[in-house]
Length: 323
Image (cartoon, rainbow, N blue to C red):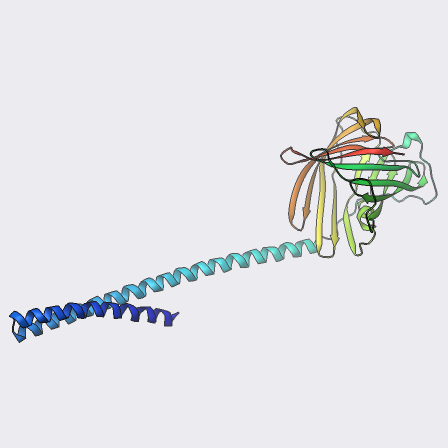
C-alpha cells in the first residue's frame, strides 16, 4: 500500500513540475528582454517558492486522497469480513442447535399386546381398520393433475379390545399408479387405546426401508374416535434426522369444523372436516401450510387440501380406490 502511494505521488509531482518549468522559461525570456539580472533573480526566487508550494500542496492533496480512499476501502472490506464472520457464526450456531435438538420427549404411545385382533365397528378410528384392506390415494397439483400416488395396505392388527395396534405398509407410486424402480416402501402404525388414536411418528419415519441411521422424536398425533364439531385437537410434532439433514414439523390449531358427505373417485363417505396448521423446517428453511382433511371412520383421510400461508391451494389428496 505504501509503495502504491509513493508511486502515485511521484507521478503527480512530475506532472506539476513539468508545468511549472514551462512557465518559468517564459518568465525568463521576458526578463531578458526588459529587466536586469536582479529582477530576474527575484523572479526566479519567487517562482521557485511558488513552485515548491504548489508541488507540496499537490503532493499532500494526492497522498491525502489516496490514504482516505485506502482507508475507506479498508473499512468496506472490514465490514464485509465482519458480516461474513457473523453469518458463519450464526450458521454454525444454528447447525449446533439442530444437532443438539435431535431427541425430545416422545408422546406416550400406549403399549399393546401382540395377539391378532379384529376391532368392532364401535372401535373404528379414522384409519383403515380391516386386515388386508388396500387403499390408493392420489396427490394432485393445484390444477387437478395427478403427480403421484400412494398405496396403503393394512398388514396386521394386534392387541385386545380398546387397546390395539394397526400396522400399515405404504408404497409410493408414479402418477399413473405404477411402482417405481427400486420401490420406496415404508411402514408405520397407529395405536388405538380407550377411544384415542395415536399416530406413531417414530415408527412412521424410523422404519423407512433403505434409510439407515434415521432418528425421530416428537409428540404423536392424536385424534379421538368420538370427534365432534367444534372440538379442538391436541398439537403434534416430529423431528427427523437423517445423517446431517435435520427437519421438523409441528401441527397446531387443529379443530373439527363440520360433518359432511364427501364424494371422491372411491365413493361417497360421511366425513369429519378437520383443519390444522403445519409448520415445517428443513435445514433452516421454513414453510407454513393450512390443511383441510375429511376423515371417515374406518376409512381414514378421504380428501385433503393443502393451502399456503396466503390461502392459495397448493395440492389435493383424494382416495381413488378402497378395497
